[in-house]
Amino acid sequence: MAWFFGRKKKKEQQEKQVESEAKVQSEATVQNEMTIPTEPVESETQPKEAHQQTIDDKKSDDTQSPATGVSVESREDVRVVKNEEIDDAERYDRGLERSRRSFGQKLSSLFTNFTGVDDDFYDDLEETLIEADVGFDTALEISEEVRDEIEFEHVSDPDQISQLIVRRLVALYTRNGSAEDNHLVFSKEGPTVFLFVGVNGVGKTTSIGKMAARFKARGRKVLLAACDTFRAGAIQQLEEWGKRDGVDVVAGKEQSDPASVAFEAVKKAKAENYDLLLVDTAGRLQNKVNLMNELDKIKRVISREIPDAPQETLLVLDSTTGQNALTQAKAFLETTNVTGIILTKLDGTAKGGIVLAIRNQLHLAVKYVGLGETVDDLSPFNPEQYVSGLFKGLMED
Ligand SMILES: Nc1nc2c(ncn2[C@@H]2O[C@H](COP(=O)(O)OP(=O)(O)OP(=O)(O)O)[C@@H](O)[C@H]2O)c(=O)[nH]1
Image (cartoon, rainbow, N blue to C red; front, side, top):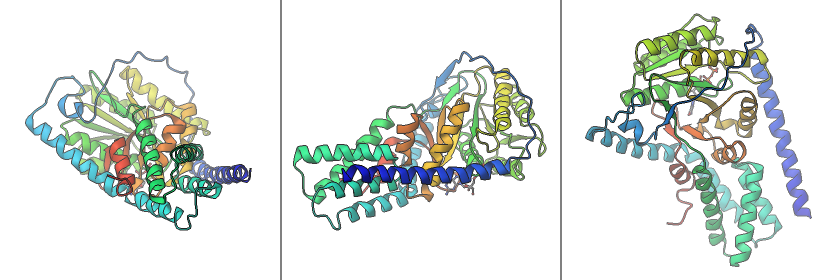
């Protein structure tokens, strides 16, 4: 019974913390966006018939043209893919070092005063998992599974228990990892459009810059659209990325209508045969109705010109904000048809468990992860490399 009340109290404390963090962030964002003029509300567009092709980012990205589906495989391409896989594994390894170190330390401190598997032990285990940001429900689920297995197998040795916990976590990550499709969707014909949404400072512009470099390196003709016309400096920031990556940017004046910038960009992408158009938008929250209308308007302008576009609406979340990122995601999902998540700044947090919480609570695929600040530090989400980055050294061979 004491065990149950301990859990309840923990959940209440956690919910309170998330609520107050969300409130602070929401207020700050809303404050920032107060001066944006309200756009006229237009009616919803009909759901469109999509003729989309799911491209395996690992295989097709390098063996097929997303625009034509024509095979462009060569020995050179295969070599590039192999090198990229190795590079991605290293990036995961490096980017998840903080989470790995922190979880390893917590796991060993769980056994410092170990006297046996009792209710206190399971309480501490749940706390360790919650601190890793796997989410409250997931922490309980893992703890229950560990309890069942310990009782069933009569395990009492701390090393064995530690391995059992890691094994359970790995199983949960890979199980959930394979449940969703991590691949980006590209159009069969004509330009593919990805729309980037998310609140201020989560890393939208940076992720666009990194993604543009990645696809340009694979021979794609990439165009960027600076539809964050609200924040001072946002247009310039994207233009700098354009210069650095050697890709074109369509930008309007500061405070100009973001939908008109989107329109110009889509027109250019069609007329000049770009493969990929990446659209940056202003940070926003769903409770600012005018801001959500603005996002709708951008989408409508895009799909009027290219009926299947945007092929992806990617919600960018900052992993360092922990559970608050989930609160933001839920707010966006209520009003926008999000197709996938880009989880940034995993290198800057010890709470790498957030991927699991996103999967278990939102049932939405994490498509890319930001693992550092350099242009190369954006990788397709790979559950195996992720797990290895999180638990390497803790897993038995
Ligand atoms: N360490 C690290 N920093 C990142 C990553 N992604 C983005 N950042 C940093 O996060 C900060 C904010 O990134 P921006 O791209 O400006 O964020 P934004 O969402 O476009 O912000 P607004 O334009 O204000 O809406 C920058 O200092 C980036 O360098 C990442 O994966 N790792």
